[in-house]
Image 1 (tube, rainbow over the protein chains, first blue to last red):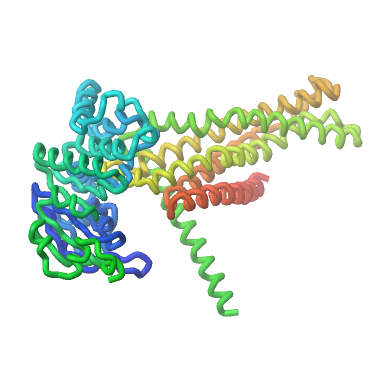
Image 2: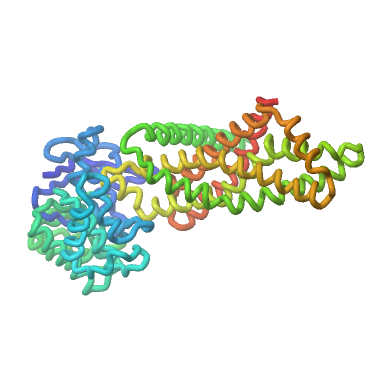
Length: 247
Length: 256
């Protein structure tokens, strides 16, 4: 279980996270929704250990990740994978090398086993075998996301953080990525945080939904609870009302 | 007046902060060379990109520099009837000053800017963050091999520059202007002492580290998308050139 307690973060005097409290239950998918710029990705980067909070704590199974050092921090990162918004594929490496990268760096598996696992992930992501020889700039947006997803999955992580996994994709491709999240979650049972503003598609993957507004969590619950939430801000966001953008 | 002083103070503080940040960055980068995994393969890749791929431009620059030195030197020395000292003048100019400085400027323009752009793009496309989340230190995987490659290849490129410059001087001085080949080389051997060569090597080591440090640092802390990468690349070339010349003055005064 991941607990975020009173997390605060400012950039150049501007408060981005304002006492955020959130729980990500073990083995469940928690989706954080909210309009652009409310601090969703900043929250994700705190859980990934990429940003240090000004105040507050991120507890993973009771241990504050900001106090982890050396081997403990290394072990935490081995349990974690992040699917970045743009994929963050290494552009000097082929698709095969990108997916094999975490295994080559962090394990002593023989090349034959690495190749087997890479091809297994490619197949799981419905990617054709010939794609393994391509470089990231030769791939479409949807393919990049799926390769990045394959790279995240090849580490067999316990926690996966998805930063806007379908932004920039056409609706069928977005649906395909959400379907892959559901399928892999069923197969592997990881704990996930999905940051997205794709309503209502994200509800199909969510066990729990939290809504952020101006650096705070203003609503939390199961998808039906959020859809029936009494807060007018939540309803305005869910229905895409333009007034919400000014609120 | 107060506003001007305040702005000056802010600028000076920013400069000190940046210098301090760069020094810590360098120490961290070099310290990681002694922490496993040692990444020899990455080091070889960077030596190829920074060193081997700079060889052609170094050869061209060196040949023309040697030829110009010989041409200018020959007619100047001829006025005093000392054209026999041409070999010595060309070699000393190249080994002490022109070789290290021009090699560094060329490497900075070719490889320094490329290093900044590469790391800057990795920063803005979150590739450095991706490394971090995979428990791979971006400093060790990306920066450290480049720093070591700069430290190793720039002195070697300087040596190539010196030799090629001397050959360029030979072509103009001996083949085109008719100076005796024996005099060209014997004067060179007589006048160049180990201190000149050592000084050139020390300079090239310092320049190599400076160029790649500036390039990595500017790339690593790139912000604001493609425009940020462009600005960082520009700053790398300008700052490297200024630092090379400033270091050159300091080191020359030390060796003189």
